[in-house]
Length: 175
Image (cartoon, rainbow, N blue to C red; front, side, top):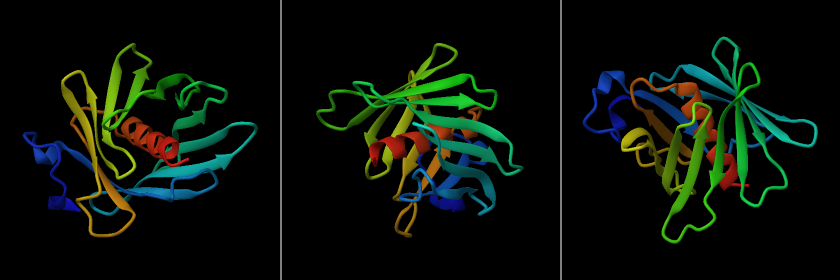
């Protein structure tokens, strides 16, 4: 994957975190690994169908629970909550009601800040931004393999949280 990824231009390539995702494997009941750019297993997605809600758990390579994705039911807009390892809300993702030209999503973080997600979500060609800063870029163009896409994460970001957001958006968009 190394030099193939190039979405976050203008940043030091050595500090950008890159991950390989597999679409259509992200569903409740499915388990799979997210690999880093060296092809090493970095995060494990544990798909559980429990209780009334569907849940996905993001674990690090050592098996520690980092984030849990829980679908909020009975909402006007699609909403998904991401909880940290202690069960506290880390982020809430909402799909915009009106999307005239492209998909738009909003992420409300626990610290009161927000991120915007925009682009072609279904085709895995989108950006995650916080204010004017590019937090992450998602693209299929970096791979020749079908059903695979990459996530480039800017330096200083919580990779597990950004990947949890990416998994959540994929889950919500493809339901």
